[in-house]
Amino acid sequence: MTQSAAPAAPTPPEKVDPELKRIAFAVIAGGIAVILDTTIVSIALHRLATSLDTSVATIQWVSTAYLLAMFVVMPMSGWAQSRLGGKRLWLTALSLFLIGSLLCACAWDAPSLIVFRVVQGLGGGVLMPLMITLLMQAAGGRNLGRLVAAVSLPAAIGPVLGPVIGGVILDSLSWRWLFLVNVPLCAIGLTLAILLLPADEADRRKSLDAVGMLLVVPGVVGVIYGLSNVAGDGGFGHADVLAPLLLGLALLAAFAAWALRQGDRALVDLRLLGHRPLTSSVLLLFLTGIALYGAMFLLPLYWQEVRGEDALGAGLLLVPQGVGALASRTLAGRLTDTFGGRWVAAVGFAVMAVSTVPFALATETTSTTVLMGALLVRGLGLGAVVIPLMTGAYLGLERPEIPHASIITRVMQQLGGSFGVAALAVILTNAAAGVTTLAGVADAFSVAFWWAVGMTVLAVPLSLLLPAKATDDS
Image (cartoon, rainbow, N blue to C red; front, top):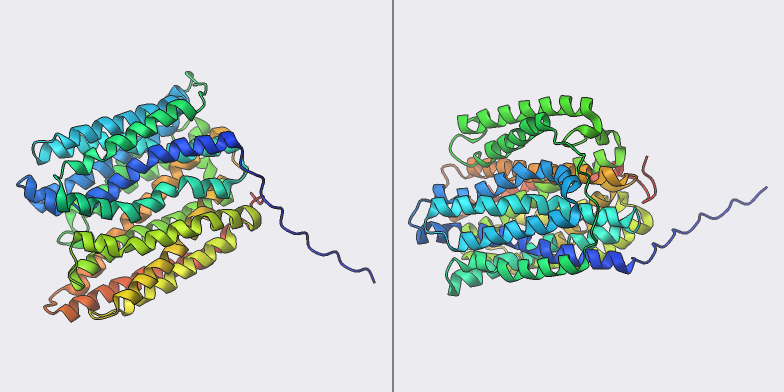
């Protein structure tokens, strides 16, 4: 009887090339400004409404206009990279974001601030998918887990520092510093990009898919705009939700039919969704967007409306989640490179679900220490989840396909986030209808948090669709 051979030990990942480290350093430095800006401004809307003498409904457009502007340019970032080259596009987008930040700091009323936020959003919408594209193209399929762990640093730092910085600014400085804080960050990012990013060749022959642009851009914007209106009166059934949402979905369906016929000439090559690792990662990134952005909508509101914290206090109480996400990134990247992302993602989603349960069970008197501990554990799961999903999305792709994959993954994660916020806003509003006591408000939040737990649990079995190993791209 022949003795069976012992299973081969996992191959340790190669060392990251120094050139790749320099590229990662440059894009991370530039990307931090965009992530921080989103989290800093999100907690300042009430102060902005007071300072600019306008309504909260109007000032909400400071966030909505920024988000919509990002989605106007995001689908075109792949074409723009081919025409300008990655380095030139990065410098252009970061410069535009810097100009937008300076203009926002000079705004004289709410309409001018909203317009200048659009300028910021146009720059940020290119930077977000381009960050991961530049790194993945430089990596050539090696050490993807550790690279994603590096490039996700701004996303991990944002929830930690953003609310704290925003709270400190609102507590002691003018609201204009919410935007001026971006200036030194952008200046450092531009300097490092000039020095460290390699020049690459542009493909002037690449033509713009005008039909695809006219379908996908208003399609995505319509869906995002419709979902952003869900929190108002009427929920999903209101005209300002249904009309843009249904129109957006119809345009996206038309774009899908067009893009599948056009192939690699399309603005976004949707044939890549026939690649199983990308498709499974995209589906899970949609659920991650729900779990991340939906819960981040609920958590600050819980601390403020149930526990009586101000904006700065709520921001500080969310720090443990960011610390957890920072702590687990590097290990998750190494485990993904060595063993593959399937079980890393499944365990991460399970940890997120379990650690959200204490908020679903919480009352107005639940120990703050217990809830902060739960947030720390939740952050550990969140940091572990993002790495294998982003890594799996790029397995087996050729260099020209990477920009298309970056656009698909970024758009789907943001769509998931918008859907999660909209759905949980409706659930919370319905649960709190007619409530007049603090205990009743706490119960309404419990209902919403149980839904957030359920959405996260759904992702655990779906994680098994990911490749078992980093080399499995089938």
